[in-house]
Image (tube, rainbow, N blue to C red; front, side):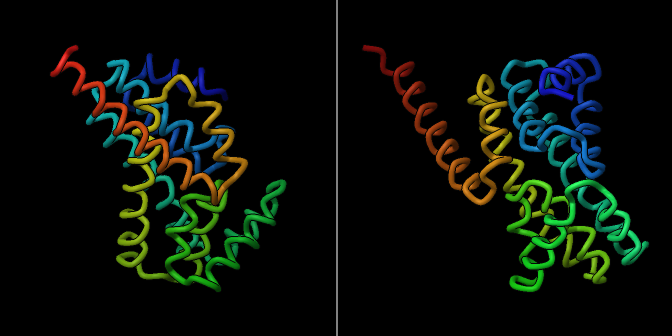
Length: 202
């Protein structure tokens, strides 16, 4: 499924398609979550969907999809990790998730949001390890709010470059956060300049 397919689905089915696209990320939908979230921002800027409801829908799609992984890990235990390992190329991401948990504990959830694939694997592991839900939700949902805000805003201001940005995020992982923050700052400065020009025309 391409970004254009997501865009078409949102155009026809609205908020439900946006939510489902993110929720299905937990089962490995072949398009980065970053691209879907940025698409949500773009359709808000184009007024295909209302911006605030699109943002709320996007956030709920992100955290509910990841929460499903936590619940499955909590209920199924190590069996769910064994099933994950049957998927092609998933083992390195399980190992990376294990390493993050060992080094950073619960705060690995914060880091995982900015690491494609690891973002989906880690909730399974913390579920298997029986992390209390209140602790999982407090860390994951607050980080998810920040992460969603960053990429939704990028999509809102830089919708024409979604695929390029999404592919670079997927490729460079850790550096994605720095790049995303730079985009956000640039967008805010650009918007401020535009507003000043409208208020004080030459």
